[in-house]
Each structure stands twice: as C-alpha cells, then as structure tokens.
Image (cartoon, rainbow, N blue to C red; front, side, top):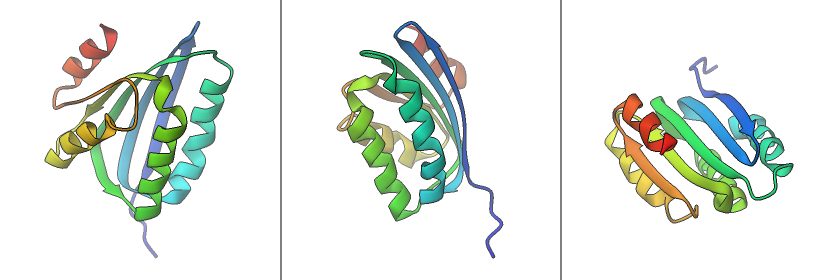
Length: 126
C-alpha cells in the first residue's frame, strides 16, 4: 500500500468576470486527484460568461504526474484554455520551467515560471 501524500488544495475567488484560482500540487498526481479537482474548476468557470482566469500554481512540492493524470491535465487545458488569462507556476525544479513553456501551446493566455512566490503574485496582478 502506497501512503505517499499527493493531490491538490485549491482556492477559488470570483469577482465579476474575473476568476482567481490558487492551487497547490503535492506529490505525484493521479487520475483520482483530477477526478476531484476538475468538477471544481468546471463549476467555478461555467457560470461566468467569458471569464478572465488568473491562476497561481504552487508546485514546490509537486513530483510529477502519473500518465493518466498528465492526460487529465491536458484535457483541462483543452477545455478551458481560452479562459486562462495568466498562469503563474511557482516552483523549484527545472522541469517546471519547461512545463510552463509547453503549457503556452494549450492556453490562449500567458504562462510563466517563477522561482520566487512574490514575483509570481506581482506578475499576476499586472
């Protein structure tokens, strides 16, 4: 039995058509993690016409994805890619910078990687 910690914590705020998602990803993400988080994201965005979503992802404890979970992440990008205005990935691993660059292929907004939390928040607020 694997008792390693993994999953998401999420905060969602809506102000008019602006949506702010703050997420922390921990461990190696699984399909089951996405089965939990995807309905929350869908629900937060479905009632807002033309949402402008800004996302802060804290990946400092993220180890990666199982293959099916990576596919789930890709599907969220395809479904909501036009809703994302800015995505800031705060992390501490080189592959996260590469993931941010690849992420720009699937969302219409900007995706950037930051090693400093305050820099990520500052960029999102501009």
